Amino acid sequence: MYALIADSGRQYKVEEGKYLYTEKQKDKQPGDEIVFEKVLMVKKDNGEVLVGKPYLQNAVVKGKVVEHKKARKVRGMKFRPRKNSKTVKNHRQWYTTIMIEKIEVK
Image (cartoon, rainbow, N blue to C red; front, side, top):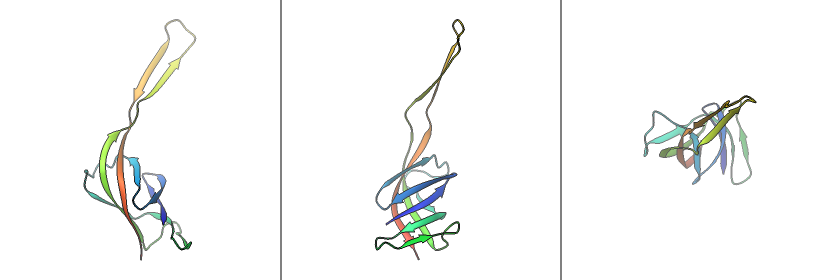
């Protein structure tokens, strides 16, 4: 069974027992339970597909926050054809690891 959920303006495919990496959930701490109520679609094990318009009213995805971390460093470089004209910038984005525990369809 898997589901498609919407969170932080993005859509994610989630399965029970798998990890989900999202943008940092600022109001949650490691060990807290998180509930995703914006479920777009659910595909059950028997092949039945439930599609929402836009969201399913009776479906919920529950998970547990594992940790907050920073992603790999991304280097951005600006180079212009002038003498000594280059700029290097680095960025590390925060993300949250969530363990998907249960997909509930009532």
